[in-house]
Image 1 (tube, rainbow, N blue to C red):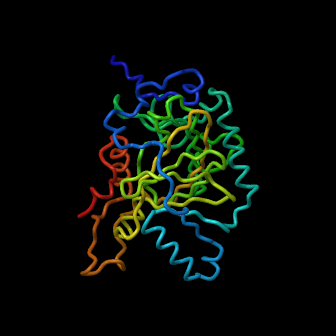
Image 2: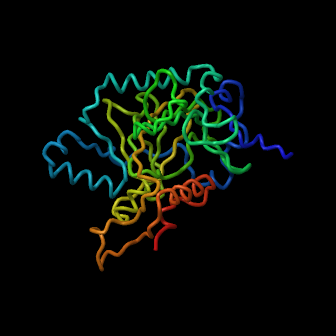
Length: 312
């Protein structure tokens, strides 16, 4: 029987603790390093920040204009005055760190591998490994479905953290050759990200340049749109490409909440946005079929943006 142990990714946290050099599956290829500029560049302007309280209470035209501009230029923005208590946000990070500090065998009780080999999105682990030459991310994660409440699979929930998707990026001995998360655009309509207050690492691509997003401050949230939103707005808003770089000395944690759609729902441009002058740019497709294309595209490194391949 052929050896398929390569399909079972290691705990990156364990690799970081026990190895001096990352395994070859994590190293960027020579062609990927050309123009990669993992150091990134400083943002040419501050990250757009939207006062959600002001926007929601009065539909303030200035805040609305800032939001539209942010979505048309960057595809992401920060939210302040969002109503979430700072103590609650801090407790989420505390729970995240506590989970990843557990012994490996304890974390494996929440594994995303059924019977140790069959992959599912929910649970603790890494991305699905589809091919032997697939480049792997230097990160571990705990992915939990929280809504609808009836869809929660508590077998994959730890006994104490009760939150979204936890991402853990251990220190990496070769940050010049390894990415925490490979370049991609998100699939869900919206991603709400709670970022590390101390360690930066998130980068967004704009006009061929990767820009560094500073570490979070003042308990702001970062929101970006994904592929389904881009299609529904007929390309008015663009789901941005982004990646996470690694750090040689410090771990980094983030928590993401993904707002998706029903897998059976047909995704296409909204009718009221279409006209003879603005025809549909994207063909319609069920969300579940679109998700398969999305995963295959970015796992296989088939190009920068899947949305461009879906245009009519």
